[in-house]
Amino acid sequence: MKTATVRDLRNNFAKLETWLAEGEEIQIEKRGEPIAVLSPPRKPFVKIDWAARRKRIWGDRVFSEEEVKAMREAEYNPYEQ
Image (spheres, rainbow, N blue to C red):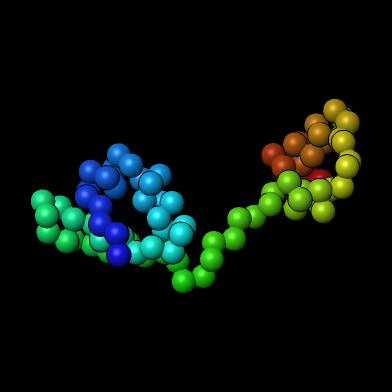
């Protein structure tokens, strides 16, 4: 188990985040006394590929200015369709 201080948590979180990504548990200390333990998630974190999702839904479609205007008006006035 790795050890870090509250100051490390505040100022060097990227380093701690790397340790967590590598599967390490981190003991957080304040004035030399342990106050918490950070552990990596039990399930691996899955990042959503938003670009692939958009392409799957819309394909390579490009909307015209009129289509965008109509969609925006429909969003602002959902009962006037």
